Image 1 (cartoon, rainbow, N blue to C red):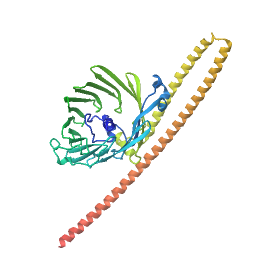
Image 2 (image 1 turned 90 degrees about the vertical axis):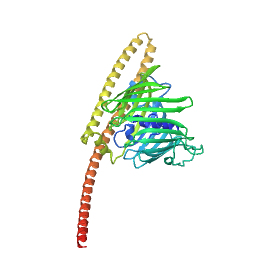
Image 3 (image 1 turned 120 degrees about the horizontal axis):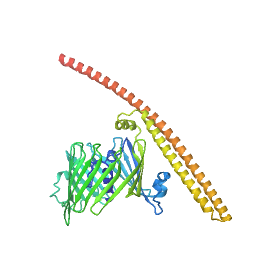
Length: 450
């Protein structure tokens, strides 16, 4: 159950309208993960440092390309989405091995009705703006008591019932949670969460009460946003924690710096990203107080049929030619970085030669000869390595150009098919309207005759 709850938090923390204290999140879609375009699947892996990790490696060009060799894979997940953006399945992974695959089902209001996860299962029923939710233990039956007909505060449920928590949520018209009341299986209160939103639908405050054996733990959380709607500050107050988090974001809304201030100290997290052509990040490097901490790798696939439609909606009906322009600009930027890296390596090589020349002054003839032979062998190996890297880089750029060309062709084809489909639909609609008008006229004539 712990892993499921953790995932639910991670899945929703990117968007500001997040229920941080809630056990369940009924709004699970790709927009809550900050994904752009019609994403079909995300394969995400978290990589941690190995014992022999060197602190200067993130500064080296090859580091990002070779992450899986210099870091060790830990936990991960594979998430799939339907064309509408709703989450379909989640497969949890550990050190490259797939675990259990969860499944989601939704009600007509677009909110979650069932989620089978790691350690538990969530089942929700809706009546108007109310949601009644059971959180089941994995080892128990998944029968569904009808909570909508019960008073959660007074109706006793025996421990034979197959759930660990019961919850009633009050929802807004948009499906946002306004209030959550949680109870244990014996109808004892567990926690109460209340939420407030601004005119843009962004969460601005939380009030939470958690009932414990040592007393009621009250907490408040306040959120602040910039004029783009990106989260820039979060302040938490409770008996156990006083914390202020401030955020700096890039143009895509992804956090580049997070400062966590607590009474006993401050921690600063920074993040570096690598993006694909749809402006979704594929690599994220995390640093804690300037020291490399972990990396997250993502492989994304997209729904082909609606890929261009989603892309146009997000970029203000951007023209197809800009797809080529974006790819060209990115390739040009990569070439510039490669050129700078080449110049840096040349300077390092020159400095190394001077150091070796100075060192050889104090060597005997035999020692100098052996050192020169060793150096030549190393230089040869280095040349071969550089040549292999350059070849691989050229092949990668060529493949990207080919992919960009194929992508543009696919965009044009999809647009052509869309226009044709719209024309066909308009033609069929006109024919149907004409037929309906004809039938209506005939019916009127028949009625007049009678």
